[in-house]
Image (cartoon, rainbow, N blue to C red; front, side, top):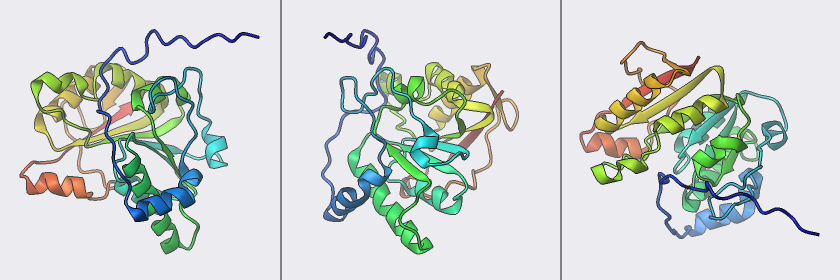
Length: 250
């Protein structure tokens, strides 16, 4: 019996927005990861790389969360500060955190377990984690129109001009965002790099699938659903101002 190998001719033909890093977990992170990581981590079949998504894989939010509920997806969830706070504050919504770095995912599990104890529950049942390249995940694995809100908070600015090609928010990413968001769904972004904010604004406003929730060329007020993270604090201490943007799926 023979099987047809997946077509990988288009696999990562564009630069990814991250570089592969190895990082050791702290003892506390390792214990949380070993004990409860499986309760949160979505099992994603791989194509080639450790953070790749095999062609044909489709995420079933109802199966993963055990219910039908509005879905929030955060791209680049980092240490989990924003997504854990949001999931704990809004149990009526499901939250999917997408991150490539294992220490960040382990820290997210650690935070979720603490938030659960504070609420008197075993962890946060409305939180799931995916270790994957976001573009691959949004291209086919997340069902079309399944997402209520897509969050991209403080992506790597790749501030050197020769690295701008690695920035996450590009016209191709805007099309992926439009694909997964339901009509009327919200795409929220934030950055502490002014030049990147201008690029984000231009990219989203040039995509016919979106309209600026606050008028053409306008930034958004600070999103109340985003807690002040350690990363944002560092940007403020460095003297960089924060720009929030909000777009609605037309």
